[in-house]
Length: 184
Image (tube, rainbow, N blue to C red; front, top):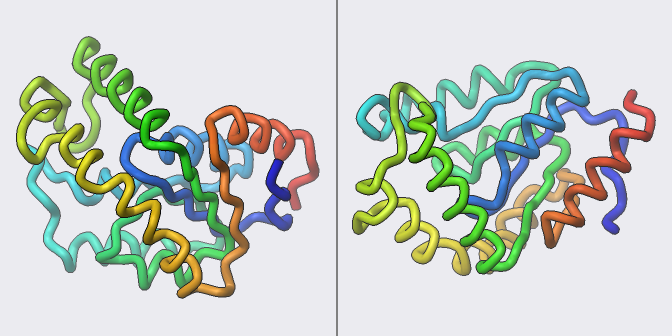
């Protein structure tokens, strides 16, 4: 099991490829630490799946990460210079492609069946699942490339304390161990 993050935790970034479980873990971690949580997808996906203007997205990241303590999830390079620079800890969900693919497929089908609203009125449907730039195509286009590039991205921010988790079970063990330990 990876070493626990140094305590106290103040500014934590949860990263990983599409469908790895970033938001789920970030919400759990934020609740445990009793700090605000933000999901970068919520700032990026405006109504009707329109992408937020760059300045607007960066302003959201800027405002959120200016706080004393937080947990934020997302890999958006367009504001990496803000969030990563301000984080003191990173939790990297570095799961195999097939693990992430099945998690992503199950999550997307569950959201479609329940008509769950994601952000700003957006919902997943067959179009978002199967279209050329849909979630599954995005996964296959980016998963392996992002996993290869992540060590270099992390190395660009040497101040970050990093926990790299390689499976959902390892993540669960890490989170349980963190929850029984003291939080400063």
